[in-house]
Length: 443
Image (cartoon, rainbow, N blue to C red; front, side, top):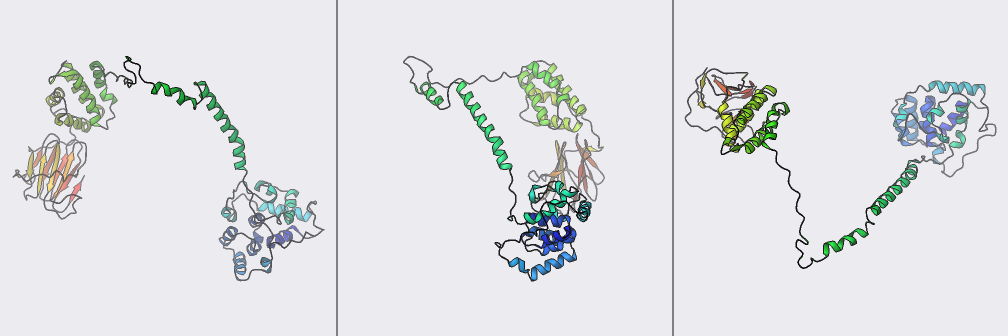
């Protein structure tokens, strides 16, 4: 009686063997991969996977396959495959040799994903499909059952070369179709409970909309009155909101905090004055609290927005202006002379200090930012780093000269003149910029 290895070798070389059997042999019997590679029935994906293994025997088989296809490959697909010999029944008790062979096959199943398996389309390493409907776990089971399934490949390989179709669509239809029908019935029942079917609703509503108004009946066909707008918050409610602003602020938007103060000024001031003088003190306490809970940069930005904006109510602007800037904490203070504008000794750098610091370099060799044609102007705001601002260039107006080694400042910004550059910074944060004809450098 032929051994199981001989039987598998014959199956691996038989052109009538189906794809799944060839895949199983290539995956579980490395010694027969060359025979699978030379088999003309092997599908292209399995051939690519075998070629990627770099095995000399497999490469030689693939070369023979390409140069001279075997005679079996030229057989007609309709040629019947000889029946298995009578001395090889499909169901028989395994001999001792077959049991040993089965144990060797089981010992080769290490659980690792073989490169051939990984490249087969649609293969699942946990549940690979084999002829006869068994799974990879069933094929790996030790004992006689595995030998029997291998011996049965003589019949399985005569099956047409096709893939098993998924049962998922039928299962989905069987489960979802009754659910959809039930949902539709429920929707129809709810519609009837609401006063009739959807088709009857337009007919029932038509007379109400198209009926002409009776003589003497006022208001017929008029648009319904809009719902009343919510009442605005009272001054007391706004005072509570301003008092809690330091704790509630996100510290990300000075403008948003300014809206809270502006609402109080709109509701609690008349003719440029607070109705209650304590409201001015409440605003000052809120600004001091924002500096403590957020930082001086946030508080200074809000202070400047309220002081400089034309939309700020007079009572609120007056309260902010009366505070001054002495309460704003500076981490990098400057000592020098207070100046609003100045020019470097060589006349190439012009600066002005106000609520924003702006400096303009007239002649330069560095690449100008986009949109800067007549010199380059940079701006520093209390809550922003230096950035180009060529739309607002510093004009030449015979500004005083800031000599080398001298410093000019205002409440928020400062500049020191050096022979190599003009260095300007934000006194609150210490961030700034160095300017010269050859370069600009932010820090």
